[in-house]
Image (cartoon, rainbow, N blue to C red; front, side):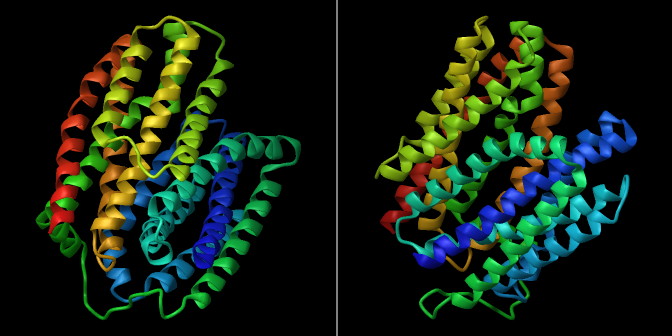
Amino acid sequence: MKSFYTLLVSQWLANTGDVLYIVALIALLYQQTRSALMAASFPIAVTAGMTLSGFFFARILSRYSLGKTLVLSQLMKTVTLVLVLFTDSILVLGLVLFIAFLDGFARPIQASFIPRLTTNRQQANSLVQGSNQFIQLAMWPLGTMLVSLTSSAIALIVSLVLFSLSTIVTIYFYQSLTEDIVDDETDESITLRDSLTYVRTSPFARRVTGFVTYESFVSTLWISALLLVYLERHLQVDPGWWGTLNASFLISMIAASAYLYRSRRAPSLPSTAVLSIVSALLFGVTEHLAFAILALVIQGAATQIRIIQTNTVIQEQIPTTQLPYVYSVQQTGYALAFSMGSLLFGLLADGLPIDSVYLLGAFLTIPLIWIGRLTEQSILTASSV
């Protein structure tokens, strides 16, 4: 369990640095170019980088162990951030894409280590997901405050310090791995095609990957950009409430993590899908801010429960040797679906009343009930074998 907390601390430092450097670079690039498009390009670069990593993940992991790959990815992120400090304008986006590419290795590896480090997987996943959301909730306003009170350069230096500390802790984690914790290293030439073949031929892996991918698609209904449009066009209230809506969503996710951390059982996947449908319907029909916040609280909790539950069952049912590859395929599918969903719902929001977009989103969420039920049936089948 000590190794799990060491890994967790290393990822806390890295995730805090991630948010801080993105805030700093968005502010810096906007100040230099005065272009909102340039500032908005960061999420695209991050998504593209994490999608691209999926095509190389299996090949890299066939040459290096999980622990060594984690160390190398974090070390290279730190070096890349040093380059960011000496780079101006649009070239920064290329470096941001590369950092996200390296993050695409770290996240599946961290999730793959959980069943090797602890037996209480639901508790571990609750802690990982809850702390990630807390970092997001805390660091965006704190990062913005640091940039406004000092400068983007100072914020980047602080982020570099955090990355460096994360690298040191990751190296310590790698060196502390014992013989009881398998850190696989193989000479087999495993490719993305091999990973996709395993996911396609394993009924459980195929269904849970389908669930994660489709969940990513419909979850884009709740991105911050659409919430801002919803405030201005539907509720017609002060845009200052935008931060409250985002905070409500994140706080409910943290609360759901705390609940699952202490609970032995969790709601079923289909029931969380029903909650998401209810929240989208409420969001679409209400004209009161209080009910909109309530809908976001319901949706945030339902989303977090699904994330924790799917991670837990994946770690319980997928062989540990296949876990990194399954997670990598899922991450690629997640990123592609998220991009498609963001584009679709963004286009719909430009052409339709925003309340109609959320009502349509509720309808598009219905298949998640069926996919969730199939996934749980696969769990029962796999458990009985």
